[in-house]
Image 1: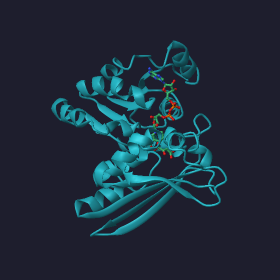
Image 2 (image 1 turned 180 degrees about the horizontal axis):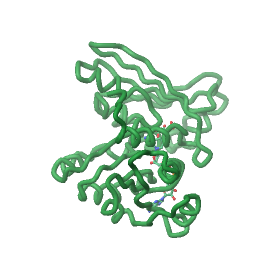
Image 3 (image 1 turned 120 degrees about the vertical axis):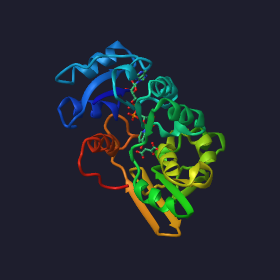
Image 4 (image 1 turned 90 degrees about the horizontal axis):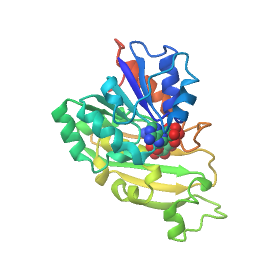
Length: 267
Ligand SMILES: NC(=O)C1=CN([C@@H]2O[C@H](COP(=O)(O)OP(=O)(O)OC[C@H]3O[C@@H](n4cnc5c(N)ncnc54)[C@H](O)[C@@H]3O)[C@@H](O)[C@H]2O)C=CC1
Ligand SMILES: O=C([O-])CC(=O)C(=O)O
């Protein structure tokens, strides 16, 4: 299978390098898409075999699977041609799938598939199982170091004082649909949790500023008629982008390895 990587930042470059070194059986790097020719050349210089460079509109025509690791505002520029080409699209900017029912409807017509890896979150398998029965509540609580939230436009516009916090402070809570409107940079994982089961209107999100933390921490609490569970993950940041956890690229690699594995673990 030829894998295309669109966006060679904290996530994309790691996945491209793993493909290049033959770390994903049955998959090869079919092409890359970068911000400009210089960035593409920089990325290719880190690979043993330079990959062909394509635009966001072309890459799906040359690959079986396209991995989207772009700034969120470019998501649709890649998603539309990939869906039109009937290919598989692995989505990291999951927040951009909110309100895009038309994209899912079109994929059903073209044979395209939209895949969301676990990325920086955990427990999507258990939520999917529980959702086959009846979910009663799903809450994702995101706690960030104060510095990670102090400059968010919602915090500034509402004069929320995060200086000198001695204990964690709830900055905003509500349906993922509503929190996403004011914290667009923090909702990929919340949208992934929502799409695994309860939807963005019923899944609740809380954003906390926590002076005791140095890393982003996400806790997912689920109550259902089959099981109740609470899971917490603390992500070590990548060197390239402190907002992105190292586990995210590893999760994409694991998803691609699963494509050709005889053993599938998890739902
Ligand atoms: N689902 C999840 O668990 C997670 C999702 N994310 C999301 O994944 C996405 C990628 O994250 P990162 O790799 O950390 O971002 P990044 O900012 O490190 O990388 C994005 C790359 O896209 C490149 N780019 C810019 N314009 C482009 C264009 N026109 N064509 C091709 N490439 C272009 C940039 O130069 C940069 O190298 C973001 O939307 C981020 O929010 C991040 C962490 C976890
Ligand atoms: O914790 C992380 O690594 C990323 C995160 O919050 C998100 O993208 O929603």
